[in-house]
Length: 262
Image 1 (cartoon, one colour):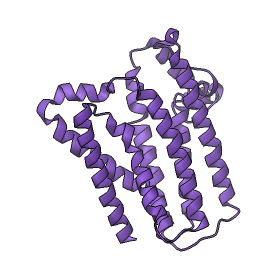
Image 2 (tube, rainbow, N blue to C red):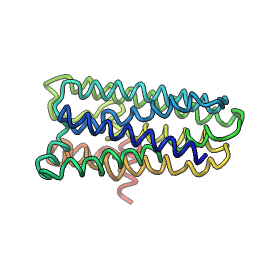
Image 3 (tube, rainbow, N blue to C red):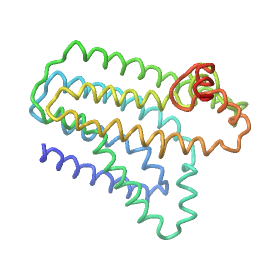
């Protein structure tokens, strides 16, 4: 277990450093977000070369590969014709000469640490003995599949909406976006919890709880929802949208209003 963690940490350190050097070359610091997810596939490829290969392990590897492929394609489609993300562009102007060292430490290396935490279910399953797939696992597999589909649909709806130039700064409030302001983020969180439940039966699997907790906290309180909410805080249409729509968990408007009124 320790050797596997050590090797994983070394791989991520090298990859984080490489991403930072590439960002200097292309002068785009948002490569941190674009390429961060590829760290998963590096570890996935490394674990695939190890001798142990059990059904539960194979299942989790397959789900992570499917998730990674879709997410990488979605992110690429978003940024391929776009300038550097406004958050990094603003930091570049504000921090001057210390921007690069702070980026390396606070973005690239920090993301590497988070990556090691988030992949802990995969790491623990890889380092454990064979635990056969059980009937209860079907629940978590179905949950993962449902929200993978819904997250995919949500991202596609948003992409199609933004492609229409007439919708510039308008708010998508139909389909999944009628029930949650961030249905794709909710789907991401649900899938991480499903992966943890699949890893739970293995030895020390309970400690992988740090993975879904970390991704939930990051999305809900740090780098996901708060940044997007702040981006639209000046938009009057968005303020009206906020009054009628749940911020995270998809809820019908009537139920959301009853909860908020209590």
